[in-house]
Length: 320
Image (cartoon, rainbow, N blue to C red; front, side, top):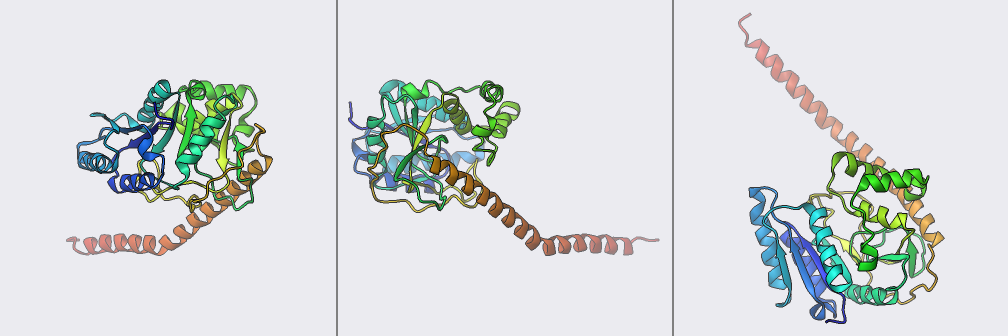
């Protein structure tokens, strides 16, 4: 068995993004000696089939020859595909590195994941290794623990993933009954409980908030780098679940972080940084929405005037 953790790559219908992901993986020294499993979801509709095929072809072109491809004929959705794949690989290998098709990695990312997986393998509270970190603008320790589970490039163990609770209703009610909703919501700077509720009531195809809730209820922590080692390239409107939000893009660090914390405790600086970041992001999003609304006002007026003019012209042609 390889000394390196297996890599699970989840693809759907974006061949260009998949090429960028694999190009970045090929720059990582561990890539060609790591077990690679590529999970390819099936098309939702017939018109998506060509893009699905093109994405699979791009992955086969750039993946090592011993990569294992798991190709679905029917669409399981990201949550279904991902949870099944993680469960399978953690069962087979005891650990896994999880990547989606819209990510780009630093050349040191796989090194970081493997070191962290080895270092914290027996630390029950450490349930997640994050490769991405939000651009908070705060000075933070090189590596630190924080409660949120970033889903943009991450790793975990079988001992942690076995606590994944797919039932969002059960997790939400447990959080509410324990009086921990404010803590879950990072002191009410983001409404994670609403996301859980939306999955419960509306069946939204979401897995990340359920994983965070599962770890949160066990007082689990995630290791984060102060400087991101993974970036998301899918915030361009091309994804099923992502539009074009602001405030998430980062430049990945090419330096391997080495100051792995010995104390398994949440970093208070990180909590404060994320609270400030979320409040600033909310303000930025609000301002952008206002600016877009103002910018579209002339167009809306023009459209309304055009409709009124057409109605006037039509009435002028009436025989009375």
